[in-house]
Image 1 (tube, rainbow, N blue to C red):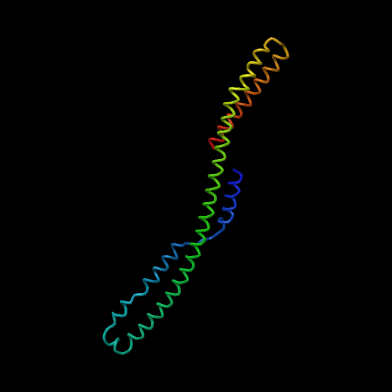
Image 2: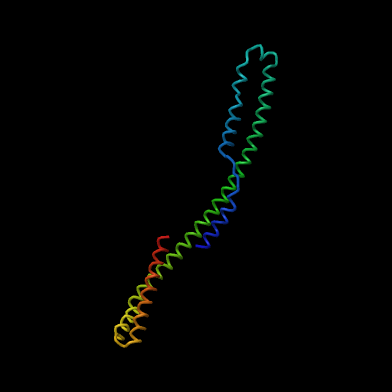
Length: 171
């Protein structure tokens, strides 16, 4: 658990103060700039404007706006590609955290199973022996008290172990 918690803390420290910005706003900006370029405007000229060079001037202005918008779209594309790389690194880190958590849970399950097996073995073996010693020593004074105390200590330790296993299992 400490390993997983340490790894998660490292990931949070790396991503906590990172500002990714608003990718949606960048994409909306691209769309707005692209919509601002309307080649149909060039065809809406009347005949006189087209005859006296107005169309040529308008085509030149449209071409300049297109080049400006294209440069802005290129900058936005570079920014989005950077964000994709950042997101890929984050996904890789989170995959690592997932794998580490999965391994820790597997180890924890093995410990829980071993604890349960120990409890069952102890109940069938040493605990039965301690109960028998306690009954056999009945009426022998000090031996009676010592055997009874050992049996009670074993029962309490076993009870604490079962409770701890249950807590770990529910966590």
